[in-house]
Length: 355
Ligand SMILES: *Cc1c(COP(=O)(O)O)cnc(C)c1O
Image 1 (tube, protein in one colour):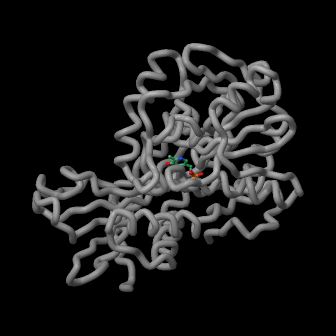
Image 2 (cartoon, helix red, strand yellow):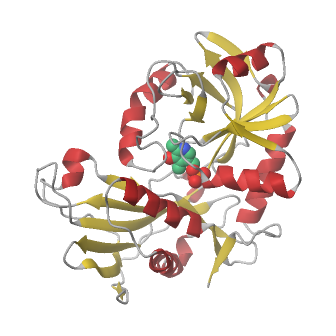
């Protein structure tokens, strides 16, 4: 792969007050870009000032939604250093998404080095307020300027970064979740296991309905029987039922979250059993009714661990753990964020320092 060309901004931006900034609204000074054509492969990797781009209106992405993305973070350590959390996992999932969408694969080591170089250049954009971070968004889309469904070819890969505050400025507040019984997010054989924009477009209607009813996210059921629990909004989901930790099995329609995987590996490390299996909504509701559902939480890069305080199913409401964060959820949050921000030891080799 060629050396990355660097063009520095001539107008560095003012850094925002991170505590007053909504998630994903501010961007750092630079971005990484590279292009792909079937003839040349990946070419012209470059770090350039963050700016709008020009595309043909015929570009495949606008018509057929050929787009994938990733979400990861750079964290400011107490000693002032910067680190990434399991970036290899994000990049290999990026390639798995590319493969599903018939898009070109990337050299994983090269993309990691490009991300490190970008973050290192914009290192002053990694905030140091408690629990804040620099959100990193790699994405790729099809740019072939032909409106034929068969047009494959040109693609553009970009990485932009956005300083984000603590997800919970007022503490870990449990969310209210609506169990969605009409719309589905994904089916086996579809694209549920990859991060593509289309999955989100299809999920918006259910999300908007839940929001209008005062819920923050939906809990998705499987697309065939509307029987098994899959995920919550754009997070994976875990439950503590009768003292046991359970999470839906990754059946192909569930996104294989890196936060989920890390939670499971943490629990294995501490000899806490975790069951990865099919969980029916009937089992969950029965556990709500008989009081054996002790805790419930979502997992994802943005919020890390997000406690669930209420579930609504077919109009009936169930409060989880008195609407408060459970002790296990809190421990999990503390342990994982401790490793991510370099406050506790990382016995797993998950963190990657940027110098
Ligand atoms: C990204 C994502 C997750 C969480 O994955 P992480 O790797 O933990 O951030 C869960 N579900 C969906 C649908 C997602 O897009």
